Length: 233
Image 1 (spheres, helix red, strand yellow):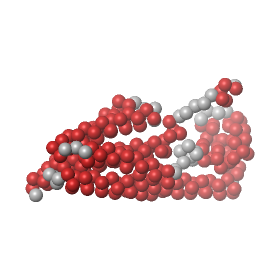
Image 2 (cartoon, helix red, strand yellow):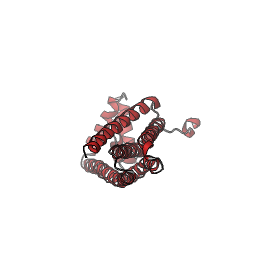
Image 3 (spheres, one colour):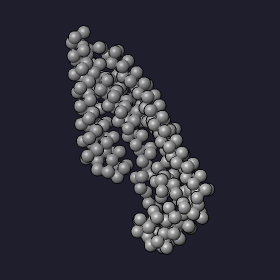
Image 4 (spheres, one colour):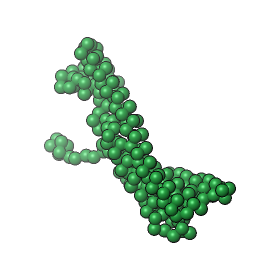
């Protein structure tokens, strides 16, 4: 029993909050900024116009990601807090009913009715709200919404992702810019997909294929639009 109690375990669910925001931010930074640079370059706007567009995409995108994540995750946090407040009121007003409700959850999971009621009673005696939050509402500290963490993570990782194609554009001859920015962006997407999959204990191959396909498609479409606009102008 002692070895079981001291055996450390790490599960991907412990990283799901920041991992989702980090992967989304970096992926969006690479795809959106790389695509914009390729599109502007395809329109023959010149090196200065390409760098200005890339820098603007980095700043605007980072702020947009931060604001979007904060608003989205704050809404989730508000819903969680509302559910917890409602559960707290129900526990205060109908303790016996809540005890039986928790017991029925354990019975549905396979416990003997008497054992289920005993377990429910002991858990509620220790922390009734935590027991109901975990087993009735599906809420826990591991998966709790953290708006500020999500916003800062998204902004930072978007900036890091966007910096890669922007730096390549800054130091690449104009005639090679489209090809090198595209290649760098796809390579970064592949690395990001593999790292995100490994961090989440998923298959790297599927993740790499998914992110590179959509990244390549986004840059191809943007380059085509840029070429059309540049030709017409």
